[in-house]
Amino acid sequence: MDKIQNELESLNNAVVSMNLEGLEVLQYIQHDNRKKVGKFYLRLNGTYISPTLNYNNMNHFLLGMTKMKKILES
Image 1 (cartoon, rainbow, N blue to C red):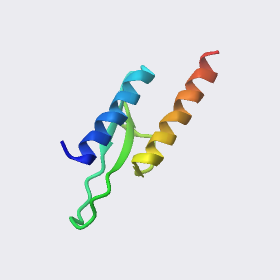
Image 2: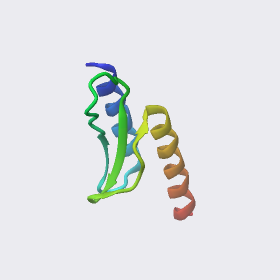
Image 3: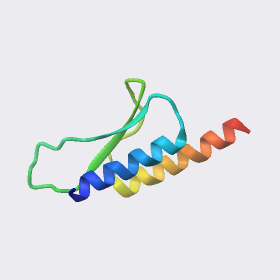
């Protein structure tokens, strides 16, 4: 597996742990083949809910969503 696939799998594992129905992480396909940085975005039931972010920023975005979910559930 290459680095981007590992990052995508890790982000998907984080999404699964959030237990939010219909939430998925997708890889942004870049048309410039020179760039090898993975970019990702979130989709919830067909609606895009995040900007296109690299792995670290998407991790921070997911951590924020996890905290928001806990606050709303309490």
